[in-house]
Picture 1 (cartoon, rainbow, N blue to C red):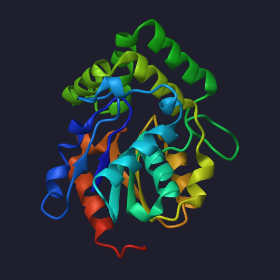
Picture 2: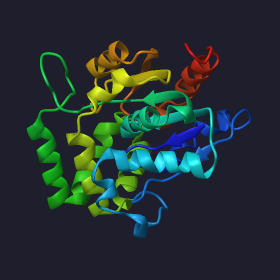
Picture 3: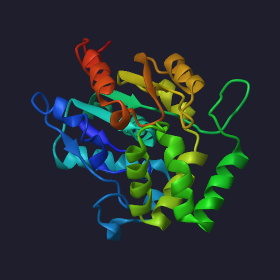
Picture 4: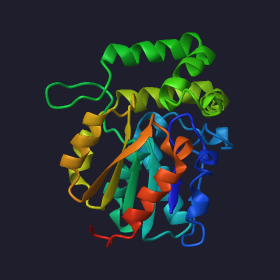
Amino acid sequence: MLFAHGFGCDQNMWRFVTPAFADRYELVLFDYVGSGKSDLSAYDPQRYSSLQGYAQDVLEICDALDLRDVIFVGHSVSSVIGVLAANRAPEHFERLILIGPSPSYINDPPDFIGGFEREDIAGLLEMMDKNYLGWASFLAPAVMKNPDRGELSAELEQSFCATDPKIARRFAEITFLSDHRAEFPNLRVPALIMQCADDMIAPQPVGEWLAREIPQNRFRQMQATGHCPHMSAPEETIQIMNDYLRLPVRS
């Protein structure tokens, strides 16, 4: 199982769910360049000018460790990165588990509701430029959406602040302004879509769109609120993942 974290996060945020799979699978965790304990000197602005650069990272991990039959678990933008990687080299992957996925964050009515207008994204990026710490403080609780679990919002805010600001700014731009809807109907690897409730980053219409467009998929509506159920609702997250993994591979 290869776990890929979301924007502004790191591999440590999988700690609540990975123990449930450690006795059955080889687990691989990593940090994208600019996140966690990654080597900042490895950052290449040209390579990481699109999500394809991050997908190449995933494929290089698979090659370096000689991984086959990978169950890729991607949170948020890593769901898109996983799809890009699977479309380029499907031989590496057995199935994908997509937590809070979204192929595009910008509304394109009437066919697609991504949750944001383009000016909303521009405003978030401007806030990052002017006051990065303030941006992190504003966004973390809105993303986590569990006001009674302040420690989770605080951890996410701290993770945002620990990310290299210049790299985070560029990653945010390519994450929130890119449109990868065309990739999902071409996916030939089976996928699980885990849709959270009351998720401002990947609202309900996004999950429903993905369930229509991904050829081989299972859609699960979660009770967990917010965008980080692996942190706020690990038991439900583990249960849904286990239910899916018990199914035949090509279901």
